[in-house]
Length: 237
Image (cartoon, rainbow, N blue to C red; front, top):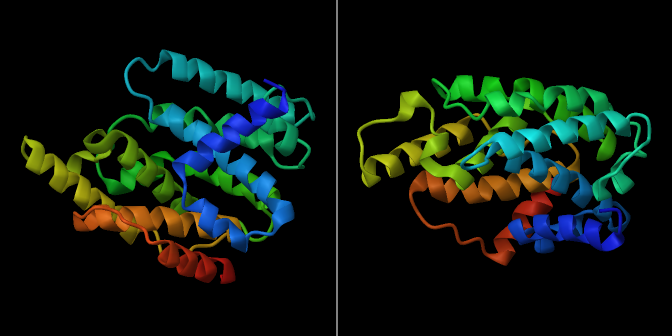
């Protein structure tokens, strides 16, 4: 897992999930792009653990491994390829390690939108602290990070991510309505102009660009010029 090709596989996996980044990354300095991708790829690993389908035990074991790995990063010891790029940074890795168990509890269906956001507050507060070091600049707000994680969860698991208070009857039409309503609620708690370093602001605007069509009940079709424009505005602050 320590070879350069192993690192590339994790970075490429994130790129494949976010093809819009190929357009947007022009607003991130060349020298910073590898570090930014490594950080976002790490967060994707945690999103995948949160959004596991089926038996959660393998994902929970992986989460425990990551908690140990991040704690070791605090002592500048790493085994994972992403650690080669990230662990030299003096970030509060142990704080993030301690917050990872919140992801297990956050899999449960929340009672309402605010409960869904609150379930991730400890985790996203730790992410914000680490990200301020990794990306530089001001820290992102935990609530906006929670909204982005929940938007990713909605995209991955669909109706299973919707809080109880938004559920109605049964059937496909009701499931789609509930998902649209949850997408709209997330947008309300996730301002168009977010706090954080430029790469975070750019990623957030891309993620919101995916969520808006879902809230409106239409297919997402991001035009490269729209991606370029939104990313430029996000990079400006």
